[in-house]
Amino acid sequence: MKKKEKRSPQTALREIRESGALYLLMIPSIIIFLLFTYYPMYGVVIAFKDFAPSKGIWGSEWVGFANFKQFFSSYQFWPTIKNTLVISIYTVVVTFPLPIALALMCNQLHAKRFKKFFQVSTYLPHFISTVVMCGMIILFLSPSTGIISKIVGLFGIQLPNLMGSAPAFPHIYVWTEVWQHLGWDSILYIATLSSVDPSLYEAATMDGAGKFKRMIHIDIPALLPTATVMFILRMGNVMSVGFEKVYLLQNTMNSGTSEIISTYVYKMGLLKNQYSLSGAIGLFNNIINLALLLLVNQIAKKLSDTSLI
Amino acid sequence: MSQTKAAVKGTKIKLSKGDIIFNVIIYTISVILILVTLYPMYFILIASISDATKVSGGQIMFWPEGVSMKAYRQLAEYSQLWVGYRNTILYAVVGTMITVAINIPVSYALSRKKLFGRNFFTFFYLVPMFFTGGLIPTYLAVQKFGLLDNFWVMVLPFSVVPYYIIVGRTFFSNSIPEELWEAAQLDGCGYLGFFFKIVLPLSKAILAVIALWAAVGQWNSYFNALIYLRNDALQPLQLVLRNILISNQTISSMSSGAAAVEAKQMADLIKYAVIVVSSAPIMCMYPFVQKYFNQGVMVGSVKG
Image 1 (tube, rainbow over the protein chains, first blue to last red):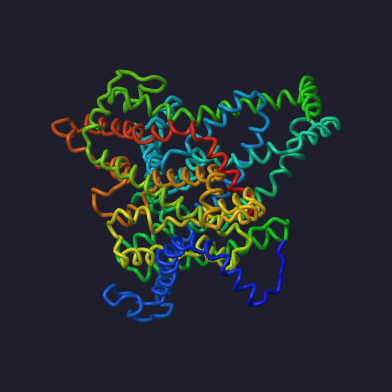
Image 2: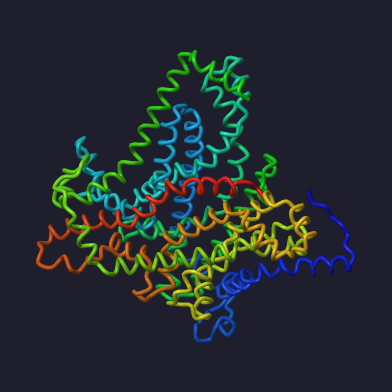
């Protein structure tokens, strides 16, 4: 779609003048972005310095890669990387395909009222805030008073203290995520399916394809392009597991699997005031994310024609 | 169109055996999913109005027992909660207005093909989606500009959202054709006049979508408050909730004199009640604004 035209200086000038009013519309956002987003980008240099608040970013001493070395060699390095990867990959593996499956299923519901009710009730948990969600998880999983232990107790099973168990943490995190966002994440796919040409189904039925076969050969291919774009976007964020939920669910007993990069950055930087070390960890995380995004984008470009950038 | 529909309907009547089994499986799973989704929310509601001892004893499962509003009455007296409520409403209202006012004009500007330097500006707004300065440098910047512990830190510094800009841009480039601008230009209308008098009235849908996203975001977020606010009087609802639900901060007025077990049971009951009080408004609003949310997901999905 792009047309490359050579512009003469005069037309360029005229275009700038004509765009003047449009620039006006952008000014407030540009100022805010420069101050609070681009200016801090320059601040990443503290990762290569021994930052002391009294000296300021510029005045602090350069230390090269010392902060990175300190992080790589600390006993926290492998556990935080591993925890971040475990939680994020587990999350993608479970929460990426399930909404697609739900959309395929919802598309097969033909009772109109029931379908509507199904959709509205599965969307609803999306509106629970993270704090409340975590509060609910802790309340429900309490081994002495929680409703889940009571229900399981009816079948004679004694539930251990799941919130205090490190191996249980990733499961709790991922499956509560599914409970909360499954319905919501499927909206896009449901909408995509509703635009499939009905004559395709008709033709398939003529050829003797049952409901299941129609789903496999019509619905799934229809979802692929959307799913690819969503997948690329997800991969770009693989290393940035949501801080908010993990931090709230974290306690000293489950920190063996719940200490992830973002919670570690927060603790090191703002609670222990190790600004430079924390900055280095954050930068490291950032770079891996960017690399992953570009990589997945490239792969997707090769495999299909869908890509983001 | 109606013919194909009739044909599809016609085929539905004679379901094969495989299709019937398929339907049974699908509907069974759907019903189970609905139960699993709704029950926890229903349980919180009935637990919050039941007798505290019965709730922690596991006697409450399907309907409330020993109904009382005790927990709610205690909450009513807990002023910090209502201060948080008021703050969140303020942040949501002011923050939403700022977010819409700042992002929508950018979306529009970027959607105009005539904008000189369009690629450069698009790049400028997109880069932070993939690369940011990180927590510490951002904190230092906020500190430097004197916004720590300040009302404005909750509504201003992070109000430019690349994702909203892209969604808006897609909307404008699809729904405001270049010809409309050319016609307005002939009538002596400038870019700004065109934007305010013609584009905005035509774009209520996208305004509603962005406003809703921003409002819900403000309602839910606690991260910025956790990092940039120290002052109790500025705390938003979610931080107050965190103190009650996660950090187990007890509401002072109730633990006096009560036996330890009873106090713990009451604390749990208060948690159920506080969940209801804090989530009910947004859940009740949801059915009315649902169509905008769905619309938003659709607008957002179109590649720009």
